Image (cartoon, chains in turn purple, blue, cyan, brown):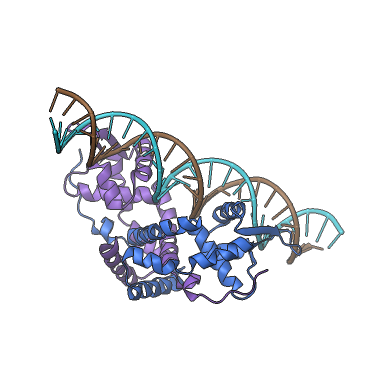
Length: 152
Length: 152
DNA sequence: CAAAATTATATTGTGCACAATTTATATCAG
DNA sequence: CTGATATAAATTGTGCACAATATAATTTTG
């Protein structure tokens, strides 16, 4: 047995930004999970739908895989299989671009568009689930987006 | 083709607390990853080491699997295989408790204790990696822990 | 004390995350 | 026009996360 270690507060769990962010993120995702299950979506799949629904508000829901990766800050190794599962589920379509055969364009199916109706109330329901006041959510959101803009 | 959708700002990606938290968490983990690779640790493995190192500052680094799950807010399906990999790597030991055969007690090996030396400077290096001032880190940390205490 | 309920961990199966590599297409330099 | 370079996705492999279930030991109850 080695001696007791000299305290190093910077290594204590409750002094870690990293763990706090990780725990908060998982906790929020957990609140969404049962709500999303009703729509047959996983959490990352929901994020893809958010992006495509938002794009469609401008009459165009098509998007390159690479754009999706950029917006969600995920890589193709995550996104490609994710989109394939969503395609099998009938929510999105995937096709090669005509102008550039390297590019794959993703779009919503009718079913994918319809699903938005059931998602409209979801963000608010998630806050309820967490017993988290809307003001608190807005303020934490602002703080985290500030951080992302500066250090992503 | 269906019509353009009526805008629903609550479904826009940049209005989601959930996505902001998820992106921040992954971004911070990414900063740690190359530093941890030098120590042969993954990020969740590092968190386990933090907990055990901290416990050892009080002369006792043994901990039940269930305690580890509680502290890290993870379930056994995540932690059990994680600990097995760490055991194979020679960082921790796992043994059944004598007093209660259901319980598995985890402890640090000598190698696991030694590894702390190389981790001492890691939190600061991660902030450097992110170009994130210490003050900013402290303040974000405080904010996230506040949230966890209230809504975990 | 024996059956029932509880507790602690492990197992199984699905779906991310992401590094590293591969495949295919497009662009550029000479 | 052709070889070199760059770009876009897909593939491969490892390690989480977590729901659901299983296994096994302990405690509680009648």
